[in-house]
Amino acid sequence: MSDVHRHLIGGEWCSSSSAETIDVLDPATGSRIGMIPAGSGADADRAVSAARAAAPGWMRTDAAERGALLKTAARVLRDHADGLAEIQTRENGKPLADSLGGVEAGIGTIEQYAELGPLHRGRSLVGSWGASDMMVYEPYGVAAVIVPWNDPIAIACGGIAACLVTGNTVVFKPSEKTPLSAVRLVELVVEQLPTGVLNLLLGDGRAGAPLVEHHDVGVVMHTGSTQTGRRIAETCAGQLKKCVLELGGKDPLIVDSGVDPVWAAEQAATGAFANAGQICTSVERIYVHAEVAEPFVDALAERARSMRVGPGMDDGTEMGPLIDERQREVVHAHVSEAVERGAQVRAGGELPGGDGANGAPAHGFFYPPTVIVGAGDDTRLMREETFGPVAPVQVVESFDEAIERANATDYGLAATVLTESEEHAERAWRELSVGTVKVNAVFGGAPGGSAQPHGQSGMGYGYGPELLDEVTITKVVHVEAAVTPQHD
Ligand code: NAD
Image 1 (tube, rainbow, N blue to C red):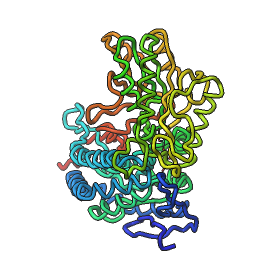
Image 2 (cartoon, rainbow, N blue to C red):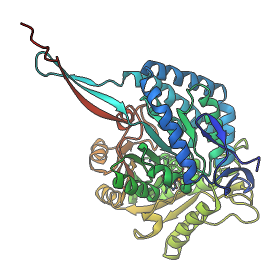
Image 3 (cartoon, rainbow, N blue to C red):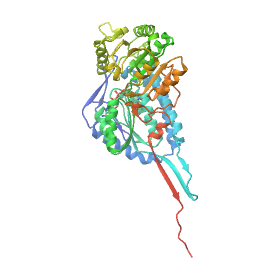
Image 4 (cartoon, helix red, strand yellow):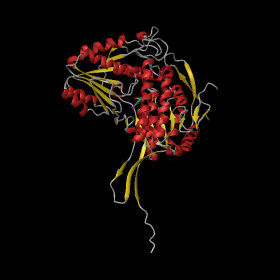
């Protein structure tokens, strides 16, 4: 059992109280590259106790000192960014350059919160003469930071840094699918922090659920699927506990009449196939105006067919594998159902055979970039998060129709509109019921942008300066001078 990774609890790397283990797989080969314990309720208990013991000292540490320690941690991470990116690619399959981009984004976020934390001030109120009135932010105490596998280092860095810099101690629960990069991240960061301030709990939902339920956890920050998020929200509601939920999406892309169809197809391919479609804001539905539909679909299908699919560690790989076999089954089930019900496959759509589609090896969890036209509104492909490299295209007759169909979803994470019309751009950001609207670029945006997701895509601000408000609680203080005894 010596090759089973360990939890970090109260400064000690320790074994689990559960004998069960979880294999960590390389999605490019399907072979095992590590093992972690299936952390238990007892492990969650120990991790929360350690975080709770460290909380009073950390809360009383000057905010400037907390920020300075995080800056040191960020410097250490920068020195090891390449190694971290490599571990991340080995366990989640994304191309190495993308992986490094994610690691660097995470380090940048730690640096931002290290600066913003000490500036996260309350306000003074205008009360009676002789009294002092103010609103102050306090940490909740112990924060649970629960992270998914699709951009694990970037997401972990943001949540952990925001919670720590505001004076919370943290129990960090990475995804069971990408725990190896989390172990390395914690090894590098924890040396810079007082004992017990950052704890690592390994495992899946069997560790996550008792962590959320623990009475000494004051705030839960979960990034992951809507299904898990809903369960966490139910637990938190039962205890009136604060949770921030950044969940799944079914993002639409609207392609308006009058745009260059080849440019629009390139945007669509980037949005649907980056990270093999495993981004919360991946393009998952495309509504293209009839006027440009044919050349748009031709160019998109051509781009899908030419995309180089392979292991993330190989030079020249544009798209890696899916995270695991289960995810590949979901993706293929969405595609197959749509096709059985009359949709047309314009590229991909088949499980790689012996020769491996798009140059992908036959082993591993690869799926080809896929373009599907005409899937029905009631298919899973058009309704549920697919989280795979699939671009489902529907042709619409007007911009009004595109907006209406884009809004016909339970999700509300983000949306993109490609248009030359200023009026349509304005209508898009006003009328689309999502947290983030992008015009003429599927990805991008200024640093610090933080939206509140709509519908089933979550609640609260998961990013930006506003996250510091989410992981703290506001107290109002009113101070008057004591009445001193009267002496004659
Ligand atoms: P998931 O919800 O299955 O898992 C996320 C984390 O929750 C993991 O650490 C997992 O072990 C843990 N978990 C599972 N069951 C739990 C339970 N009952 N209680 C507590 N914790 C539990 O999600 P995933 O498959 O890892 O990630 C993919 C999903 O994440 C997609 O839906 C994607 O859209 C979403 N996502 C959202 C954002 C965003 O910012 N909105 C960012 C990245 C990913």
